[in-house]
Length: 379
Image (tube, rainbow, N blue to C red; front, side, top):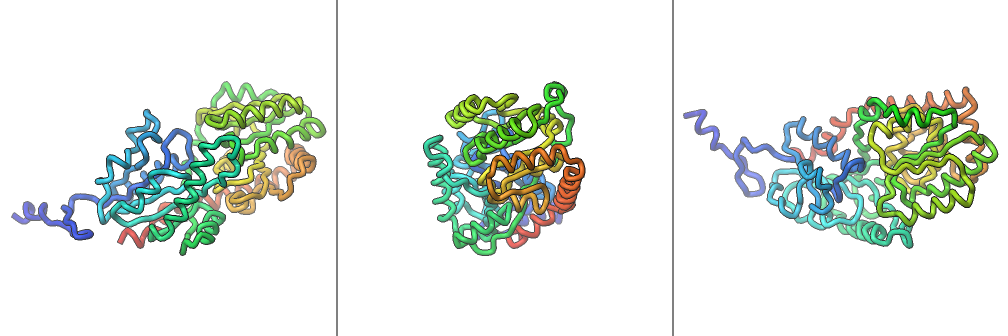
C-alpha cells in the first residue's frame, strides 16, 4: 500500500496540483531556430545543461521561424503554450522583434531573460527594410519587457549596461555558452588545399550585414594588398541571404578597387569553417556593433591573431587579448596587419595573450555559474 499510495502524492504550485513524478521544466524561447545561428546553438547547449540538472527542457519558437529539418528540435510556442506550468522556468533569449517576445509575459511560471543585444535598425535602413523593422520592433519589445522577468542576464558587459540604461535592475553577465569542441574537429581537406597556396590569408567570419562593415574590411585589405603584401587574399565566410543588395555593393567595391583574390564564400559547413580558420594568417574585424562576436573566440581557439575595431562588446569578448584600434585609418590598419603577419615576436606575444584569454574562458564552470544566476527561480 505504501508504494501504491506514493504515486498519488502531489505538489502544489500556483494553486495547481501536479504529481511528484512530473519533473519541473526550464524551457527556452527564441525568435528563430536555424543551423549555424549563434543563439540557436547556445539554446541547444543550455538545453543539454538543463536536462543534465534533471529538468525537462524544450526550445520554443514561432513555427515559421523554425527550419523544417529542425522541427524535431524546437516546438511552436503558439500551439504548445500548455507546456508551461506555474512552477516551471521560462528563459527568453532576447535578440530581435518577435511574437515570442509578446507571448513571454503571459506564460505561467517563473521568468528569466538572456539579452543578446539588438542591432540598431539604422544599419539596415535602405538596405533591408524588413530587418530594420524587426530590429525596431525588438527595441520596443525590449523596453516593454522591463519588469517581466525576475532574473535578467546579458552575454556581455556592454549588453548589461544597455539593459541598465533602459531601467532594468540587477542585470548580470553570463557569457555565451559555446560548443568549442566543434571548432577542434577535423577541417575540410579540399578547403585547406585551396587556401594553402602561399598567399597571406586575411579572414573575417560573420553574416554579410551592414553593421559588420565589410566595406571597411575591404578598404583596409586594399591598402594591405597594394602597399604591404601583394601576395594576399581576403576570405569572408558568412551568409548573405536576405541582404543581397548589400552583397552587391561589396562586389561593386571589389571591382572599383581592383582587388585580387577576394573570396566571399557565403555559408559554409563546420569542417569548411574550421579549414578557413586553419588557413588564416590574421582575423580582421571592422564591425561597429557586436553583442558578443563569437568569431573572435573561434579565432582564439584556432590560434589566429586578431586585429579588431574596438566597438560595442568586442573589447569585452577579447578581454585584453588580440590587438584593438579605435580609429579607422585604413592605411594604419594595413600597416598593423603587416606587422602581425611578418613580425614573429609581435605575433607570438599576441598569440600568447589570446591563449591566456581562451584558458580563462574555458576554465569557467558555466553550468555552475548559470545555476547560480537562476537559483532564485529554482527554489
